[in-house]
Image (tube, rainbow, N blue to C red):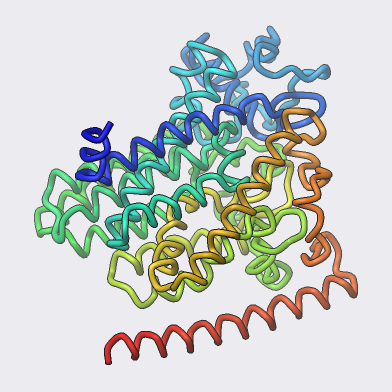
Length: 467
């Protein structure tokens, strides 16, 4: 045992990553049997990713007509009314899912071996791997003590949002894996040669195939690599990115008759790509999401995991850091802006945090940076927030398994006192009542004062350390 501990201490990155992978695989597996709705185990867009996987296995194509005609989707979608259609037929009669095919292709191994549960368990393994790599990335970027960084990573990985989306049939977590993997490779050395650049190009190329919405994240990392690569690496990046973009465009134009799959969606049928994107963008009526994504009574991610409030001061530390940390800040900022001004709603038929969860694996970095600057009182406070957040996740898991709630419809109605006792503190942005305005003003005022006080205290301590 002593020898094993000594080996773990000698290689903290590897041992910590493996420990996190095992822990999260076990924890996330318990999310598989939590139903999305009363009528079906999965809902929203989930079945449309899997019906495409089924079509690829049964017919070798993306045309869903056979699956609808034979009702073969009943093997994974158990709603009494069957599966509705999200899309209109193309001019040649094909019926396609209005989603990028990357996730459907990715899930072929799990679905072929175990159907719905097999696909969900494959996603659990992907999620656990994502967080293991996130730990390695946070350790590299912060240079903090391995135990502290490990705890910060575990705290975010075990939030309610990360727990639920570990087995949801959505591309957010696989996109997170591609993003974190690209960052691990791109930041391993000060300058990048052709080999690592090609690896980064392949990982970033996966992002738009998982979802067109991830293209801005890929572009930001690509710009960083373009800056850090040697000349021939830059050439490899530009050529690889060009080839990747051309392949993506050619495939989607040939199959979907548009650059995005939204062209076949019932809502956007007949619209151009530019018009479809334009319909998504809105500023004035969505500005509240900048804080609502955190503190909304039902859909705020920090409402479900107060430890995420620690990310806010951590963002300041990212801004003060080196180019790698500023890249992390840029990625988080881009995703928040997309979730705020481009995503049509933050209150859909899904669990809170779907529009942010792709960058969740980056959040341990600002939290660890903050913890590294805290003394024992700060560590205690962060520990309490982390344990409270973990308690909410455990309560949600129990409520979901007991069918008290279903995660895509009414998770916020779970009766756990741990969760409901502080509900009155958070504004409900379903409607703008007097209470909503008052609570919003209080949150913004107290948050602003808290950040100002923390920044002054941090500056004072930094000056003291230099003296």
